[in-house]
Length: 225
Image 1 (tube, rainbow, N blue to C red):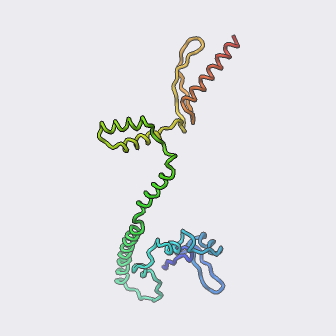
Image 2: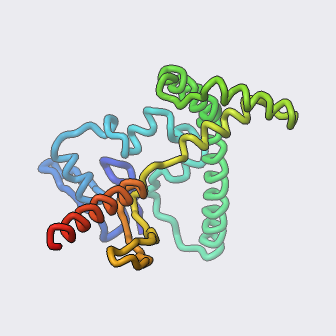
Image 3: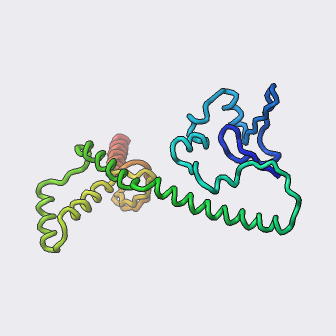
């Protein structure tokens, strides 16, 4: 059983899977899926598409020069069946896959070295450019935090960061709504407790709406009298 590689993206094309395109000159092109076949017919360059092996090799994201990759080369030399040879071959395949996986992990670590520092630098640059959009503390709040830090013996900047985080986490509205219990006085002098649900509005807005509704009802009652 021979596992060929896709002509366009480089993925393995398993037997009885994928598409085989035969050109007029007799050359066969094996594709792992219809996506690669369509891109081939549209005459697209695999080196310019980020999801292909050719692009990853040109971008330095794949191991190109490695001794373990030479074992995957095609060899059309027939070999007579030998049980011991097959057993040794299977053990060697397992060992080669382990070595290749370890080398790929080392290659990935070297390629991603310094990424965290670059991300932190980019984040700091973004914060410095948009500093005017960040919430700020008043002078009285800063003085209060300075006195509190002096009493506790902690850093002032840490307390300021916590206070800013609290300010940013406060939300005036509830997106998913909730329930509110209120006590309402009836026109006959009685008192009743009601439970109302709200969604997407503030509690204060709901109470204002109820106050307007109550005033409208009282006006209607007076008109009927």
